[in-house]
Length: 133
Image 1 (cartoon, rainbow, N blue to C red):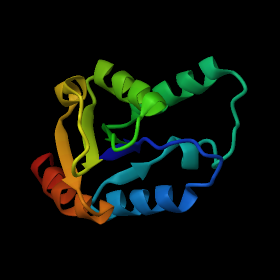
Image 2: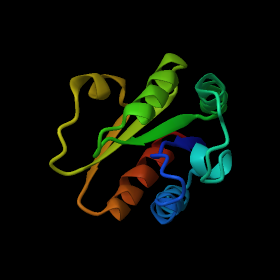
Image 3: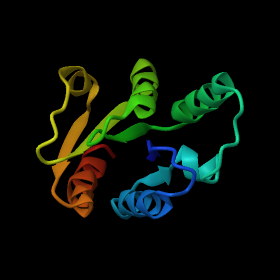
Image 4: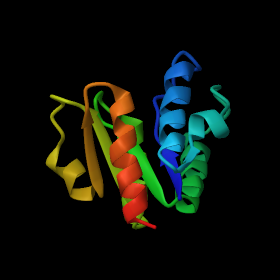
């Protein structure tokens, strides 16, 4: 099952964080895909925002699910979640414990995982993967 992992675009400043999240997702038995890593290679490659979002939409359509961390304001990532929802993709919401999750986000979520340490997402993801085979 291929999962589209949303991430903040920070021109590579968060590369280690993205790589770690992708590794956690992969260790749970999912095929990881991150637009910033796999398409943009941590660089600004789209000068036209319409082209950027069209390409993101194409990649979301190719995926089985989308993972979004809503711990910090996920403006661009929320748009990707909306795209995924509109194409009936499964949406996994993760958030640091104590984060207030909006009802609209809960309304599109297939699975919600709260964590103290990001590595705590692996076990619930594994369980979810097994139940969706």
